[in-house]
Image (cartoon, rainbow, N blue to C red; front, side, top):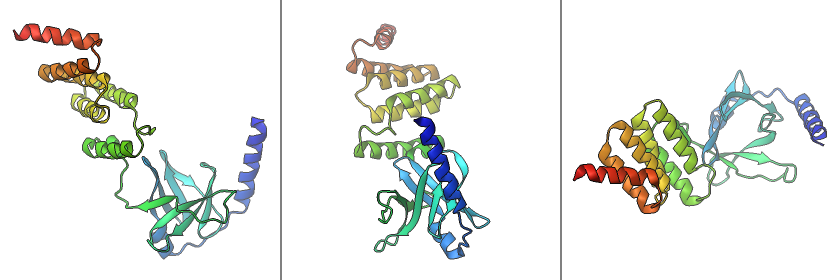
Length: 234
């Protein structure tokens, strides 16, 4: 069954590729449609042209080929999707409209064109601009608390990746983000305390281990550290 589906998909791509047209995009059209489109809450599609051919940048791929169907429409084999450039009649904003077999003649406004300077939370996180990354993730959480783009475990692993490289301040910044996103989790305070302790800040380690105990009295590491800290402080 999988082999049959693959062959059908391959046949479709070959057919579409054979229908690809040489489009002479005008400078005005290139200027209007080039840029960044918001694919989801934490990902963008970058559209650009090279030698009058349209390409995409998406999910780490810097130059994804497209198959031109007409001046506004193109197919992307890597995504197995067909798109169309559309401009909203009232807002005058540009969108990428995803064309499906079920609604081939319908115009939808799926992916808004945003400013070239627009960055998603993960982009800010990659650039280590932690305050803006947090604001973005908090907004995503506000809209959908179960979003796949915010995951306590993922942030925790990133923080420990920094710790393994002795990048203490980066680790602390990431763990603080996790605290802001999951303020009732003992684990986020435990991790932050660990990073503070390794960086030499025993007081903040105590503060955060104490906070971890508030949410989980069975946290042995936090309990042992708080007891030891209190003994030394007497």
